[in-house]
Length: 248
Image (cartoon, rainbow, N blue to C red):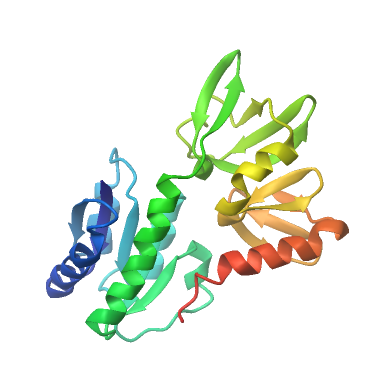
């Protein structure tokens, strides 16, 4: 079951998008839709609600535009897939600060919309099938999804899992221990958005906020050094990761 939120001030477009989603969703699973007609309505309803799998968000809305809504939404939900929809506006540098997966134009044909939606739900399906990582804290083992992890670093007799601040387990600890060597764990997760930035750690590229010549910054403000030996490898992996994020 996919939890799908649609926020758009145009009720006809919400109906149209649900129809297109339903047309492509059969092979991927069932859907539960949540409709919002303004950004404020969406943000007000987030309190106490489980995270959505995907949010389709209109860019042009009265009172709060999509970029403003997305910034507040991301403060609470780091891992929800975000898909912008617009009838006129094109992406701006500000748009990508909230890490959208796609930017769809409303004037797409039905077939183009369905092609784009198939990629969205293929990605979500793979995400649901991604490996489980076990973390240990205070002699207790916890099951972690990959979206819970910011980065993983080498530790004595294993590695340390550094958790996202709003992860369900971050209230227990922001760091957990895993008994596997970093190189062994990386083999299990390398196809799910993780890459070496340094011989001592691998990074969840989903949570990279920015990168300069020698460092990268994660969404929680953590700054990590990129080693010379891993710089080209990381840039290549990061480029591949971002290649699916831009309007084609």
